[in-house]
Length: 266
Image 1 (cartoon, helix red, strand yellow):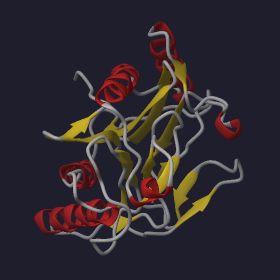
Image 2 (spheres, helix red, strand yellow):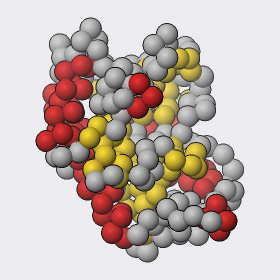
Image 3 (cartoon, rainbow, N blue to C red):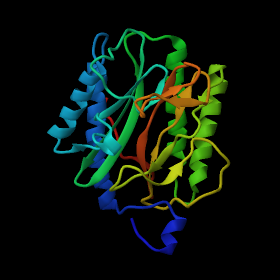
Image 4 (cartoon, helix red, strand yellow):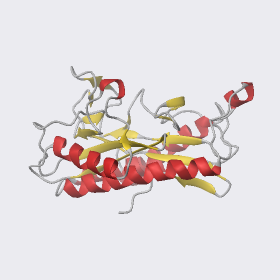
């Protein structure tokens, strides 16, 4: 990123070559997520999923960015059912048929970070859970579409919110937009300013310019917008026990429109 007074008025930006380097890190994250989903089955522990992700990341010559981050022990965050984000992988947490699983993963390659998450079901899941995950994905995609030069930060926030409202209308039910959590700037650090809310009025905050990068990550629930953190000081859960979903991509603004830097080859 550049420095100086002018820089504060824009979302931090990268050169084309730096975006390619970030996309290489993002591709590692994408491969790790695909491998985790392939391994997710009833009877498999979340610690086993963590080991799958770490192996993919290290085999690529990259480093898991979550491991050791403020003391976090895993290479993924594995958040099951009512757990929203930051679930710690454990040998004692075993997947069951019908579970709704959110996996968040990050990797550092050549000093650049990739950060991405998705939600999927184990075996056959109920329709409400499937639609919740779809609504969260659609909200993310609406935010991605707003990653255009000249837009402001909260134009992306507003687009995410509108994506949620459109999904509510299509699905005929309300969703809770998790309060207090959102996306962020990313580059040579995983979490950088600015914070990106998942709702709000448009037209505010720093401008997006060609090369600006944000991690876009809506989190929706089937009920409340409120969360609590468990005694492990990491795991965030819904206060009403309702299920939650989390989708995330690292996205850049380019002259040709939004560029997803964490592509997955599904």
